[in-house]
Length: 504
Image (cartoon, rainbow, N blue to C red):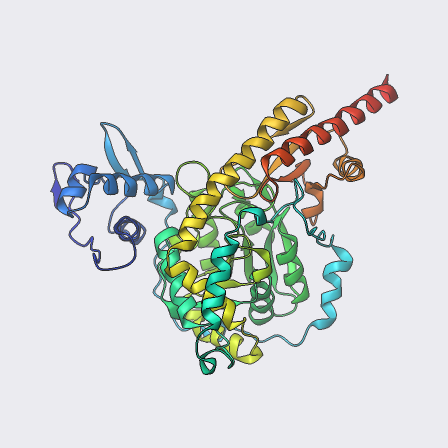
C-alpha cells in the first residue's frame, strides 16, 4: 500500500457532506469498515489527525474525535507523539468477511408452544412489579421526573390535528417507514450501525421482539447460549419458545465463549448484552466480541444483541455495538425506547441482518400486531427534530449526578460492608457483599425498611460466584438516593452486629 510519511493513504475514505449524518460519524463508520474488512492491516500506521483533517477537508477536532472513538472501540491504538495505528489485537481475532446470503433454509417455523410459557414463571424468579412512584435502587426505570412532558404533549397534539384519513387506518405491521428511517439515521450517527430503513422493524417493546424472534428462529430443544446471571425477561421468552438454555458464566470480558464451545459448540442462538452486561455491568471486550462472532459463524448461529442502555454512557466514548463489528451478518440488534424515553411507550425495534429481512417481514405480516401509529409517528418526529439527541445528552448528565449520589452515599454509610462499584454505562451498578453475607437476607431486611434491592442470584439460572445487590440509580433524584443509601447502610450495620453476637 502506498504510504504517506505520516501514515497510510486513505483514498477510499468517502463521506457525504449533504447527509444528515454528522461527518464525524460517517468518517468513523468508513474507517471502521476499512479496518474490519482488512483494507487496513493490524499494526498499519494511520495518517496523523492533522493529515486526516487536511486531506478530507474536515476540522482537526473532528479527526481527533474519530480516532478517539475508534480507540475506545479497541480498533486502533494512539498516543501523543507516536501516532495512530490499527490495533495489533486484530491480527488473529478479526472475523472473516462473509457476504450476505439468502439463508431462508436456515429458518424453521416451530409449532405453537403456548404450554411452555408457564415454565418461564414456574422455574425462574418472576420480574418484580415496578412501583408507580420513583423508588431508589429499582432497576431499569428512567427518570420520569425529568421527561419533557410539555414538549411531548405538544407533539402528540400536533399529530392528531392531521387529516383523519391519515390517522385512523391500520399502520404497517413492520412499522411506519418514517420511524424506521429515523431509527436508522439515529443508529448510524450514534451507535456506529450502518443499516437501511428496510432492515429496521418496529415491535411492541424489546420483550415482544424477543418473543417473536425465539418463536421463529428456534425449534423446541434448540440450544441457546445465555448469560448467567442474565436478563430475566429475555430468558423467559427463550424458555417459552422451547429452547434448551445453556447458562455461561461472566468474567471481566463478558460472556465466557470458551465455556460455551466446550459444552455446546453447535448452538442455535446466543443472547448477550455487550454494552452493559445485565446485571453485572461488564462491557464485553473487543476480543471477546470477535470470539463470539467466530463461534456463531462456525455454528451457523444467530446472536441477539440487546443494547438496552448503551446510549447512556458517563465517561469518554460510549461502548461500541456488537452489530458494528459484525461482518458476517449474524447479529440481530434489539433496541428500545422504554428506557431512553419512558416505559409506557412499549416501543422497541430490531435491526435485522440482510439475510433475515424477508423473514422479519413474514414475522410482522403473520401477526398483524403493529404498534400504535400515533406513538410511532411522534417518536419519529421527536428524533428527526433533534429532540431525542438533546434528551439523551441531558439525561446523561442527570444520571451521572444520580450515580455520584449513590457512590457518595455508599462511601459514607456502607464502608467496609458493601463495595459499590462505579459504572460508566447504564441505569444500575453492583454492590459487592462479602462471602459470609446472605444477599437474600439483606434484600428481605431492606424491603422491611421500604428499600427494594435485587440480589444477583435472582438473575441466575445456576449458582454463580458473584454475590451482591443490583442498585439502580436512574429513577430517583439524588436526595432520595442519598437517604436510601443511609437506610441500606443501617440495615447492613444491624446485620453485622447480629452476626457478631452469634459468632462472639
